Image (cartoon, rainbow, N blue to C red; front, side, top):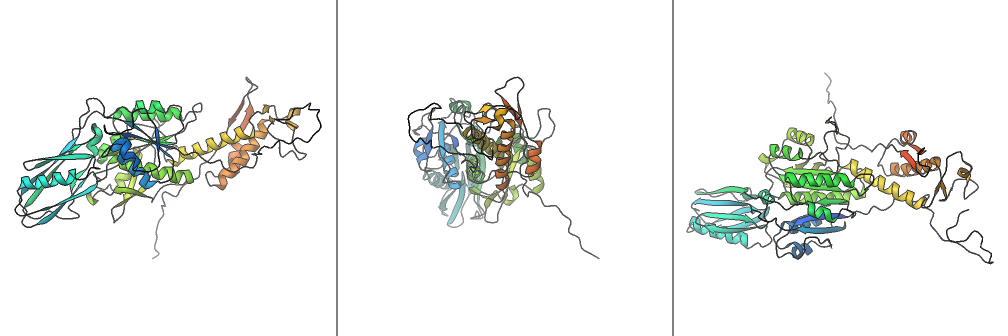
Length: 495
């Protein structure tokens, strides 16, 4: 028998008992979900670049990123979707020389009677009452004042003559994703008055994400969300996520990012990366900013995929994300094509809510540019991460200081019990490791993470290396459980 605390030649009389855990029949190990939001801050924000802080309440982000910042909105959206997962934040300021996006509302005509005019700016409702005596300049002043009366908005406004110019508080092309609209669905514009909207545009110079990624090179995070969808940051993000997933790094993390855009703009966005560990998404002309969408989806994924990594997220409501107008919602055919280009899709309810349709990765082709759906759904990398984490931790607990021998070696028959069922941790063989793998696979099957366990065990192999007798090599096959995505059938009638 093997002991860790009692010397083999101890002579002093007495009864000595080691107390230690036996991990042979342990259940699943808790998965340490940990989310990082990289947010864009304003100068009043107290979170300095290079700092990482844990956040428990959404309102903490106001001080850290600044009131009216993109970062504060990211955190609020995440916490609205997920109140329990551990959340950490780091901040990047506007890039040097960044240009702020801007858009306009232009009034013309007159209000024939006192009318409440309703708007949406960055997804938030704005209103004022226009009087018949108001000139277009007076209405512009009222709208600008109503916008500025909401200090949490990510924009400010200024009126000049009949025009209200709305400017993003944060610099960079990220501000081009802010929505401006007259909310005619809530209140039609009265006859005789016209309000023209020029969308937000002209923003340029996003912060560089790489600096924030460098902070966490060796830190454990399971999901990361940020607001920037430009080519440079998307490429850096995909490289980072891929490097983390390698066998030697084993710091699996999944990324989330979104963009507002037309069908053509989103297909271009999806084509920027080909990464099994990155989820990209977008809506056309939603009142809600893209970073709110990706932060809210990240929150849903962190909660539900921790509970069950193999279960799809379809039908879950994305809180705080307003549906586009009916004319701006993608058709089923467009959604099907978006999925082929790496863009996750959403459906919309009659009450204006947005729900997940299919959450995927941006992976589309193999290294040889062959179409490949092996990593299509987000559940695939997340489930494989869970299995790899659980298996690695289980082996580390069960065999922390094990000696390695061949299956037919005399040492292979050493056991801590007459039955041989409990081999203990002192000696491991390829066969014993295969038996341990079989026990874990049974557990994964009971959780319905994998299926066809008997095939898994037949095709899994453990062998001692011929070149290094201290090395045990394996090929461990699993078949991830499927999800009901499509029900295709023929409905026939008899004549």
